Length: 248
Image 1 (spheres, one colour):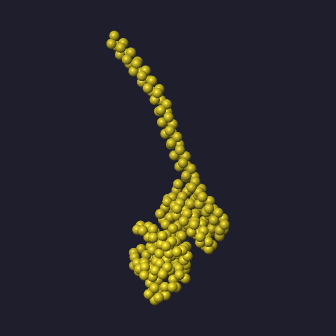
Image 2 (cartoon, helix red, strand yellow):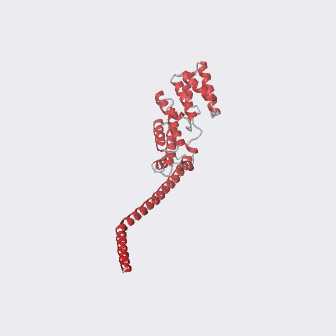
Image 3 (tube, helix red, strand yellow):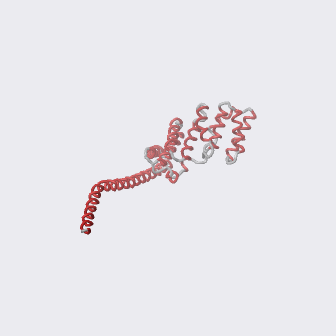
């Protein structure tokens, strides 16, 4: 008799497990479907961003070739296509190039706007600070001192890639604003600091000599001609640099 009871209890338990399984089945299927959808979404997004980055790279190279052939209009248009793409690294590079082209054409305001945009879209500190420095240098002989100070001071922080270039530019801005004492201190620093280039040291010493001789008024005329640009330019940055900001 006990065997019969055990068999009946076993059947009851089996029916209960089956009922629980049937109740849980929709939830299990839903979770499995959600996991599958998530996996497919991730794969699809990765494929999309890679395709977008590849397209941006191709168009960017075409723009460089057009510029090398002096087809400025076509180059600017193609850089514009890249700048409107979703690949942030290439967008920043393209905006840097467009800014350079506008600067060469004497359109400083447009160049600054493009460089400021490049700084805002780049996730690469070097690209972003390069764009910010270019903007400040373009405005060096026209913008109020306070504006230049606001642009350059953050770039002078420790470990910023162009901190010495920014320090040199701020020294010239101070000199042009009549802040001779502060400017001289900056130039003395630039003439002695480790990491300064030979060109920076020579410009610093020349500026100190002008200040000490009372000829600092000649500085504004020379600012535009001074080789103040950083050692890295947008044209020398290749696709591998852009990849650091993609895919996004």
